[in-house]
Image (cartoon, rainbow, N blue to C red; front, side, top):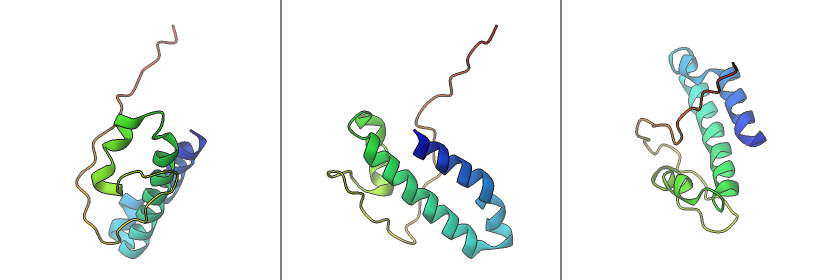
Length: 92
């Protein structure tokens, strides 16, 4: 889970949604790095979350063993949808 948090922190720090307008090449690089990291996290979690992991097969390739398949550079990706619903904890 630390890997997933690190990817989230990376995306928040680099803000690729802003780079898409100001520096598109850098924005693409940031997204490629983030997707590569997400792919690694997905491979690690696939044995524990097989159905959730398989949702990403069309985008990142099928998980086969402990290695992650390289991403196809330039492959279009559909608009993402959340894999999990956010859980709000009641702190009262």
